[in-house]
Amino acid sequence: MQFSKNKKLNKAELLKNEGKYKEALQLLNNLEEKANLPPQEKLACQLLKSTCLNRLGQDEDALKLAKQVYQESKRMGNLLLSFDASIEIAEALLFLGKLDKSFEIIDRSESLLKLITQEPSKELMRRKASIAYLKGFFHSEKGELDLSLQFLKQSLKLQEGLGYKQDIARSLTQLGIIYLFKGEFERAHGYYERGLILEENGFNRNIPHLYIGIQITSSYNGELEAALECIKRGLAFAEELNDKYLIPMFLNNMGLTYYQQNDLIRAFDCIERSLIGFEKINNIGMIITVLDSLIELAIHMNSYEQAQRYFNRMKLYIDQEKSKLNDAIYRMDEILMLKISPKANDRVKAKKLFLQFVEEEIVWWDIRIHVLLHLCDILLIELRESNDLKVVDELQYYITQILDIVENQNIYWYLAEIYLFQSKMFLLILDLKKAQRSLTQAQHICEKCGFSRLGIRVSNEQEELAKQLSRWEDLKQSRITIDKRMDFARLDEQLLRMFQLRFFLKKQISTQ
Figure (cartoon, helix red, strand yellow):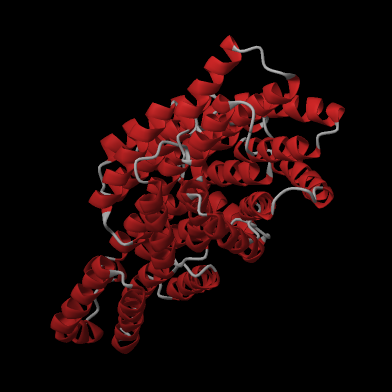
């Protein structure tokens, strides 16, 4: 929107279009303090402030201002201002997690746009691009990925026609998120890199989200040092923005990355700080997610008492915000506490409850994977205790279910890890051909997807198996116990890695 009469409003609009939101906001604040603006210009000033606040992550303030502008512009019969205010309301609501309310506003905005016919085509195009972006954002949050892609590609095409770099970067960021969900990590990384280049020396909430995306894609390829560097840069941005949500989110992701590196002390420290941050803003969903992480870390460090304390804290929050996801996490951890209980009968109860859980329809595939991994862990304990190879058939049944999930979700790096685990299972039953075939399948995935570091690890496993073939052939003739075979195959080591990777998967993709 251009303002022909007020030069300072025009300048603020130009600063906003250049992505200089802090400078624009400062100019607008000064203008409001020193000038007695006519009603129309005052509303325009407030609307610009709302946009800048949204882009700087100050959603509550942006929402409050945009609602005021909408009510007043509606009273004055100014459709254009009503539309623009609705867009800011919808965006603020999306970032605040109020999806259904946001969609109502998006729908209202679309109806308003149909009534606006007198504006220049460029102005209409920009507003159509905003609608498409918000729809894409909304459907990505709902998990409707193909529909989200449709709207985001439409938004990107319109934004590229308009040429505003920061708006193009925002569409690229959301497209990166979708391709991340779809498991197309290389393509996602490309969108994030393009977005970061466009942002240049900008300062807005989109930049730390781009760093999150690059961090995740780097982590998936095993480039953990590069991932940590992205987290540090993103965290510095979040702290400068004073974004109360992004700061604990980066701390959470930092902790998850340290966990991948087996640096449990630093992982604990970061995730504990993340918990404090989310508790300060009372984000119940993230509090429960982070407590779930801390429970798992405590278990990994063999601290049943500490895990129990975190679970007791989770109990305090679970009734404050009812959701199927929160309930699923709580129920899973409730069974997990039985699994790690020092009482022998509790593990039997845990297995029974996990079996019931996995037979139900669990919407969240990462939770389903976690439950299946815990079943595999229980079965490996049974296998060591019983030396009964029939347990391997049950183990294979659940590994096949995990394979089906990751294939459907196109999570190729995790698929390669499952094939690695499967190859070690085949070594247990001394089926060397199938063990080699599983490693070959893992290698093909690494080559196809460019997973260089994982590919090196798979190649090392192939070389190791080739060197040890005669040893495994000799084992066929011996009466060596199953638990010794498990040690030779390093099966527990690979299962631990799969737990760590699932742990990393848990919340990073959906933190944007």
